[in-house]
Amino acid sequence: MKTIDSLGNLKGKRVLVRSDFNVPLDADKNITDDGRIQAALPTLRALLDAGAKVIITAHLGRPKGQVNPDYSLAPVAKRLAEVTGAKVTLAEDTVGESAKAAVAAVGDGEIVLLENVRFNAAETSKDDAEREAFAAELAALADVFVSDGFGVVHRKQASVYDVAKLLPSAAGLLVVKEIESLGRAVNDPERPYTVVLGGSKVSDKLGVISNLLSKADRLLIGGGMAYTFLAAQGYEVGTSLLEKDQIDTVKGYLETAKAIGVELKDHYSGKATVAQVSMNLVNYEKTAIYRAFEAVKMEARRYGVNVLESEIVGVVPMQSLIDCAEYYLQACMFGPMKFDAKKQIMENWLLEDEEEEA
Image 1: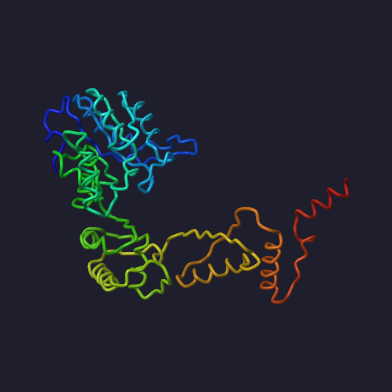
Image 2: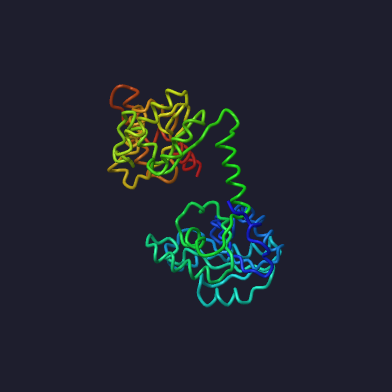
């Protein structure tokens, strides 16, 4: 793995850095957690101290290839200036006239932040030619490339994958740190070693699962892929996400795990877990609250799970609560019982008292 040192003397050179600045924003576009910006600082400071002209490309949210002010990197530019102490110029586009002018004017030890790279649909295009053309425009802005967006480093995207083939490239300090940490976790882990895997597909994690089975003490499977593990154990998963062609592979994982003493659990059938089930009822006359609750209880029993409590959040019609009360009173008393809202809802007692006092 090539590091920044392999790029030689960077003074006066234009360095394109792919960072991950997908930070959370509040309604007023204020950054609520700048952790990803802080994580990028070691790389940025090393480049600034070396006298490089730093050009950053990054994304925020999912604008889906459209220019959308809600996903502008303006809040990031402001925060970058605060934490680096360097001059930061935000280009109004990714590779257009604004970006070219900003790069032409940037000085040594200064930063140009290109606008959200995902404003350009070619960034995430499945068409290789489209991505490569966009990557060529990005590469034209710089002399070398540093990949430092660990959260996106695995993606086949123009600013991550394609541009690295066009310029002398190296891994940033964040990527190096994360890869070294991952290497220690995989090759020389502390015991007991538990790995949590998620995601929607088993098929794109075959190598990872096979590798970890021989190293981990416990594998916990979550996300959509857990349904394939459930199906492999004979559970019905309804219309949930399922890779039928991977069921036999997963059965093999389960057999291997049992044979070598690795505890392999899915999130749903594993023991000692707590799940919260939330639902929105739009028409209580069609679907009574108690029917929804009983349906959840029945589904829970299929997996050997007990329902501990239920809670109604929000404003609901009183009649829907009365219906629930009548249903459960009948169940408890083994016979029909009419619920008297006037007598059995405390709020109504208080209202009557207030009316009498008035």
